[in-house]
Image (cartoon, rainbow, N blue to C red; front, side, top):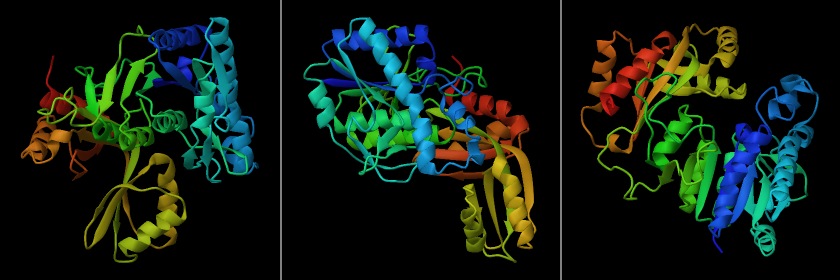
Length: 400
């Protein structure tokens, strides 16, 4: 028995027309002789009645008086509704299908409600279901504690559910369906010459996801990599024999080993802080941020100052904390981080020089930079983002 996991996000189940299109992919896999685990997100996005943000809005969102355990009771309903609706339509179309919650499917988590960690998955409930059924539809985003309390596993949780079920059930592939045709070399809304990526390594995709590419949650990629489960990033609205972008080990022959850069990712709405360390040490500054739940990013530390970034929503909080601590700082709002990602960056001389030259040719100031083995990051003003993205894409990925 070979198993494929198919995950459908909110836009892929937003209405009956979308669900019918999704079911074409399920039927195609069944016709190929596969058993299919379907993982669904809540129906639609913010504004749709059963989307996660809409459900949170019923109780005041971040101002709710509910405990995190009680909030999980509420928001888990979105995926449960979606699973029942999808199963009803699948059965109406003649598929041999059964539905399961995350708890039913054997997903056991800790009790860190709203952001639970998956402890283990018992594959038996699903393998038993496949004795009679061809398709098992599972709620994404949720599991349950040892004592049976429903939990949710954080934003992007349906991707994570799909990956962990694929690993536990030894699936031959996990397909992540979305409203785009697969991975692109950059956001086509910003980059004129962005193009489709046929194959990408887990490491490259995880880096692009961490740095702003929104087609998949990076945790899901990391789980698939650890289990060596191939993935595909696919479009719900393409034909079932269109397989999108393959995600696999870097050693797989389909990946072009010679390419230096695979893609350009970006994040917006950042504020850069430059904080001298004469009043508070660098350690004390970061402890102050952590104590108030502020997650700093893009960090540079020197003997006399630290430089870091916060999302704009946290910037005002950080400014007040530093003012209260009698620490003078400089800040630049409306910044964007541009990430040049590629497994071929490692050991290739001159990549940074090409980045600097490409941006200088467009008169774009680099406010900050850092690098790792497979990614080089630069911070620019958000007003320069589009020009920076296009300049770097044309420099490394050319024009087709």
